[in-house]
Image (cartoon, rainbow, N blue to C red; front, side, top):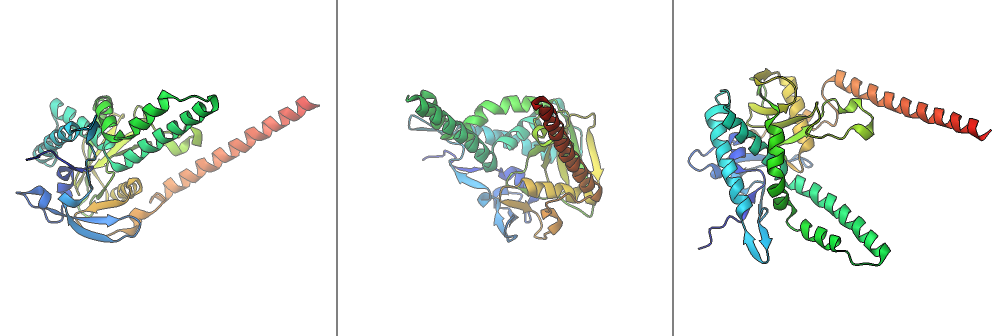
Amino acid sequence: MNNNPIKHHWVPASYQFPFASRPNLSQARESFIWVLDVDSKKNREDKLENVFIKKNLYTIDIDGQKSYHIEESLAGIEGSYAELFSTTIAKLEPLSEEQRVMLAVFTAAMLLRTRKFESVLQRFYGELTGMSKQIAMSKGIKSKTVDQLEDLQKGILPKNLEYSLEPIANVLYKMSIVFLIASSKSYYISSDNPCFFYDPSAYKLPLFYQGVGLSNINTEVFMPLSPKISLLLTWHNVSGYLSIDNATVNEQNRMIVGHAAKQIISHSNKIKYIWFSKCPLQPRRILSIYFYRLKHIFLKHWINLKLKVKNNRRGR
């Protein structure tokens, strides 16, 4: 009998369970959860075992032989996280050093395992392969590099997980851990791409410099963990469990929707349309964004004008 795991969740059922609308404590995968399509705004209630799943997503083919060790490793990480959440985080208790390591590993896996991240990898290596082909054709040669890149694109997600999980987890472990607790009148949703990082101050920089890296001092990693708790990793000196207001939760839910690929999940079938706003919900932040955009436009035109005047003087 073949017991190899071939149905793989890119958002694990153990992570989805706290968001369940009808939890089944004896068999978590039999629990129900609300799934909402971001574009159509249509929702359905489905079992966790059917949500965010694809056959052989993390299976690696080695000379015709199937390897399931990536999925088996992920299953071990998921089990450890589920215990960590239920015994410590859900009770708002402090984490031990061992638990901090476990949380860093789980968060790294959540950054690297989704279908949305797979599409990013495919696009990057596709462009790299295309450029390599053009160079090879211009020189009239057959490039081994092109063949290697095309081979790498097959099963890129599990291959990247295997090589990137440890270094990403090491970076995340060095960050401060903050758990945000939603107010009694608000709750968190999640999505098919629940873990993401961003720089909340990036809009202050010119567009060319707005790229975000995990090591940037202002970079934050965010992931909702349940309807009442979310995780924030930051380089700033803050930690512990912090209560936040309804407006902040709505803004964070807006970011969750913005980073989703296609679907969001929730314990409730209620929809707040402010979550789908393309602009921040705070008026002061909107004004600040437009101020810096206008500033960058002005500086760009001013520099171009100075260069034009300088070139005209040289031409005389």
